[in-house]
Image (tube, rainbow, N blue to C red; front, side, top):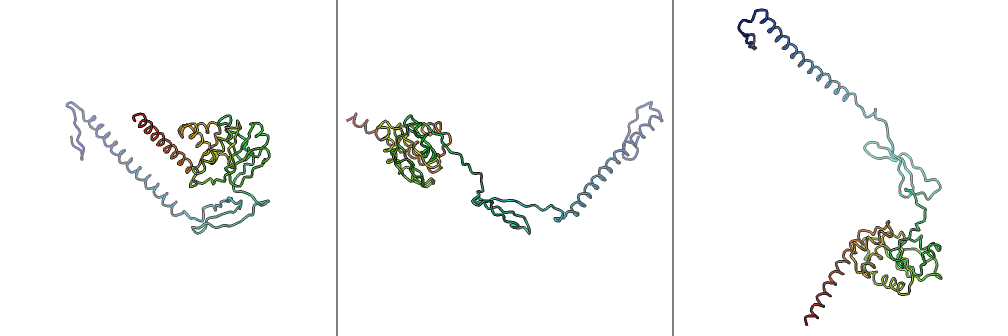
Length: 268
């Protein structure tokens, strides 16, 4: 049986009433599908309309004004706001008491002493200026590689001062010979030597690492681990780290050259 674009197959013996029920059911289904499509389209139209209205109603004037309070490294406090695509300083407040800082100052003393060897210590300028700590560790010699740090107890210890800048471009290797000589001198006299810079993190650490590589004939990795275990805060700057690796390469090459010379002497 054909009705419109739909074709219905009626089994033999089917009554006219049954055929009407089938046709009516198909018609209702078609109407429901058509209504569903129209409803979805209506909802979509409503949603798009609402979004369009919201966009048209948007105004920058409705945005809440914001400002940012900034504290510079020098301690100056300013309040900034955004206007006409530019940052404007709308208020400037002088730091109370003067001499403020743009960071939290740590005024506690760093008296942690890294015992690399019983006779070789690593620390900061605070340690070098604390007589009780120096006596506790039986220090006899002090190697000062800081800048602008005075030797506090000239009558009590043997000092050597070498001002080294904590910069990656500083040639730290050039200071090795005189530093190593002073450390060896303290060892030969059964003394205890403290190597320090300002923070005991970069320069002094690099000197001690280099000394171990030279005297103990160990790799940079092993020397660094020994010093790091003794004083966990060490962190030589990137330039010093690269120079220490280069120092190891040079020592490895020297070992190879000496080995070849020994083999030549044996063969001759």
